[in-house]
Length: 191
Image (cartoon, rainbow, N blue to C red; front, top):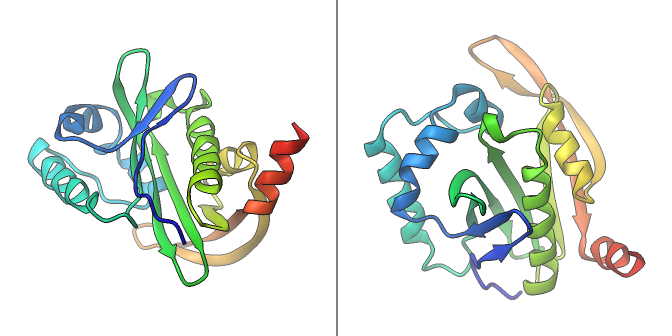
């Protein structure tokens, strides 16, 4: 397994890079304190600059580990942090990673999440030793499913009622997608 850690990735409209403390204000403004975004992402809401700075210090310290992969999603036109994408879990024994991402609400439905995920897939299979990427979305978050589909990931199954919303006393499905290095290479050479 080749681990190179979080490296800068560029696309036409985005820059995926390591987080810095300078991201705190954009994060607070665009996504990390938005209850809907954070609920869909499965993370808590951060309500003030101190809590965001504390989180950033944790993430930044983790960059010294070559097995840590977390990118700020930066809109190139104005250098604004509009979200994040990361490997939330890596299994080095079996060479796969689980991917998570979120985009600020005012930047959704513009293709940014799909662009970031497609770039991350390319990076993963061309630069690391991982053989598989996988992700799931909650059944009620169909927009995230569209992101996964647009990014070359394949539907692999649904775990029915495997997610529980405590506040609403309601169950939801987890809908799984995945892509193998062979899938990526096949698509790359057919294009």
